[in-house]
Length: 497
Image 1 (tube, rainbow, N blue to C red):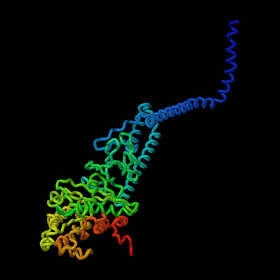
Image 2 (image 1 turned 90 degrees about the horizontal axis):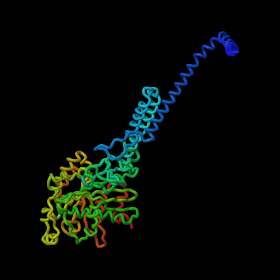
Image 3 (image 1 turned 90 degrees about the vertical axis):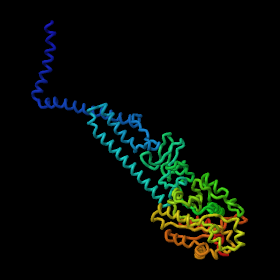
Image 4 (image 1 turned 45 degrees about the vertical axis):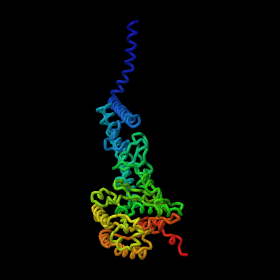
């Protein structure tokens, strides 16, 4: 019984194995191929599984860096940098790429070399993003600069008198951004360290931000950059009538804007409101204007003028006459190098050469209002030297207006001019007022010279004298005609009849 039980399996194995052996002997190529294919397939499967594992590790690292907060910390702005976060193209893109490569290497080295195609694709995407971003930066900067040139926008700080390539802006948190234009910290806008968003271009509303001068850090209330700026320096001896003339020019613009619903002439800033806010009272014939104190710090008085859909920022500079007596004090007036139009204010009654020929009756009448201003050639010579030093050959393109004041006091006297035409006024200034040498020098140095005779007082109805309008029309030449229309003489506005 025991031997029969043990022989049965052996018999079965013999019955099954014998046919297999016969088949294997007869079909040995197939058997060999099968034995070789199994390891190959197993290897391919292992490689695929390994590649999938590496790709999964790589994808996990990319997700962690880009979306799960595992990206490198942004470096804090340096001492000379703006307090704003860097835009992705401004550094984080390359930092993230380095973090992805480093993280993948740490988790799967040395097999990370097999991920070279993935890394190359990621690098190409980053490079493409960088190129597109910086091209946008360059285009936006070029468009912004071109618009400033086409609109003839020149920005000047009325406090330190320096030319501004671009103003600085203060965030609501108080941090100051000095280079807000498109760059590595933003293209269309930037994000301050306090998380506030700030536009990067005048096109997008930077003029609405709190503007400060990047040099002297004073607040620029006139919102530079959104409109052309006209720097208009007035110079002359002490008591020549510069302050009264400045008020008269402002009042003439304000009065000229009244008939037009879309026109305006508004003072900008505390200083301008303080100096020009009482222009009506200052221009009354009975009003005596106090001279500007020599120690008074010069600041530009800004007037925002709007007409016909255009805007102009007019900066009026009225320094004390004593400043024009010495080279050292004239050299402090940096705004002289930012102007293309200058007004020399002359008080004819202050000159002994003009006063001496007057009769006793005229002297007695004019003595109470006579100023003790110095010879206008002294102020003219000092300013001319400074303007030539600052402008160089460009002074030949500048304009000089010689403004003879006190027109209301000269009427009916032997000093009154014979007409209001330029030829008559030039002849009067040269021969009656003794300004021949001054005018010949001015014509030799400046591109255009014109003589004006003004009266900075108002009539009983509070209207300014037309002579101020004639002066303003010359000052505003080259600007949109809507500005000149504000100061047209009444007969020119009404037309014939």
